[in-house]
Amino acid sequence: MLPSGLSGHMDAGWMVVMATRDVDTLKYERVLHVLRSRIQDGTYPAGGILPSQHRLVAEFDVSRPTVIEALRLLRQEGLIETQTGRGSFVRGKAPVLAAQSANPGRRLLDVSEVDSSADLLQAGLVVAPTRVAVLLELPPGTKVFLRQYLIRDEDGPVELVSAWFPLELVTGTKLASPEPLDEGIRRHLYGRKRLRLDYAVERTLSRSAVLDEASSLGIDPGAPVLNVVVTGHDAQGKAWQLVDAVLPGDRHELRNVYPLTQ
Image (cartoon, rainbow, N blue to C red; front, side, top):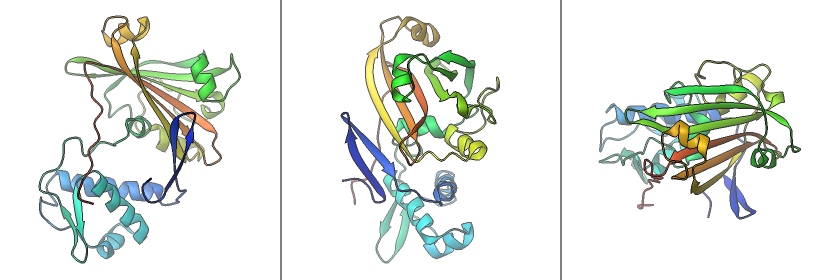
């Protein structure tokens, strides 16, 4: 069963999950971010009670459904628990990675290159590889815009990310900029083009690294990698972007944290 407010269907073996269109999407994300930050920095201590829904509605100047959705996501992350008639309480210990999205693909759409400490490798026009053309429903040989960057940590490269866009999206955006983007793809496309990505299709597979991936990531050709591919679609189902992340298999694990008390 899908979470409240979502609908889905099977598409070629993949579950397509579509969020109900909601004009308050960006508002509940803002509420979620602030409440999560307050829990993490101790403003709302473990065991403490969160402000009532009425107070949160007034503080953030949003609707009650917007607050309810933010609280639902905090429960899903394991950060709070709700007791009927009493309110929402901060759990005694925040689970590891609770602040990260349960879906790697959503992180790829929402995190900025600046926040990722990304090194931009290229930003320019290329002929779409076959898989990219198929997933973006473009004719073979179509030119697209590629934005590729490498994410590092103190131990070296940890993620090679390639973001592909139809050319019609590039004009009027910062996608062609040689500087790292200071906001996530989804927010940038909405702010610059008023394009709302309504749902995403995420695919994760394991395979062997090809030569150029291995060179960028500092691993041996043929080494195992995780490949996360996410396409963002509008409400009519059109795919407007594709983000492809290659993660060295020996440096990553995909974890999902969720409460078992509901």
